[in-house]
Length: 270
Image 1 (cartoon, rainbow, N blue to C red):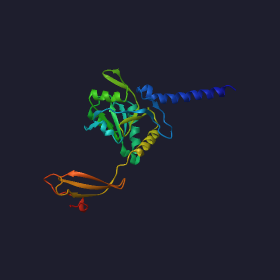
Image 2: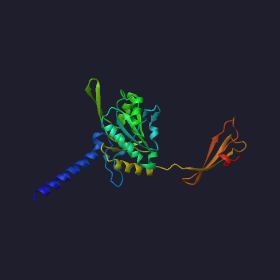
Image 3: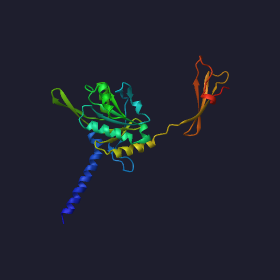
Image 4: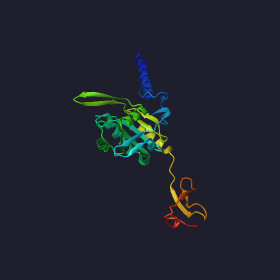
């Protein structure tokens, strides 16, 4: 019989096409020169990985609550970036809703994750409007800025945005609907096309969060004044839970308060 053979051939072609389209997502659609996207094994990561990862430049934006945002805010943390606008009818609210729900399901790992929504429509997305909009998606932080600042961010992530006039002064924006993962080294590491299963993204976040270094917890500390003839300072000896080892630091003391003070009875003067 011929039909079963043709059916198997058709399925093989469709499967290969889908795999290739996902691999080409980061390379062709996003257009990263010199940074082809690869598809990691399922046992590792689900996102399309940029190899090498793309370093973020010194971005400067403004959070919708008025506080500044810089690339340094991504250092040592996991960050998800999504670009869109508040008048978006479907893709943006659906994506942000999924991200907000995903964060709630991460448990303790959620404390290591930041999620940013960068506007592509600064003319209409005022700080007040953007802040009210992201309030519908707990955990999502709105980012705005000048045209130059937003253009640099858009160029960094290779986001495409095209304005479509609807008449009567109204317009829509067709834009890249990908979610970008920035790692703890402030590098764009993974890209997730629109429609990525939330559980795949959650699995990657759990994997990467567990790979982050654990902050040492302070167990105890002791302080004493500097030796006679030495510069005015306090030596602090702190035991850290991570390595159970001690570190020593010299902390200047103001002339107005020459006597060191420590944490309760654990402090001592020599």
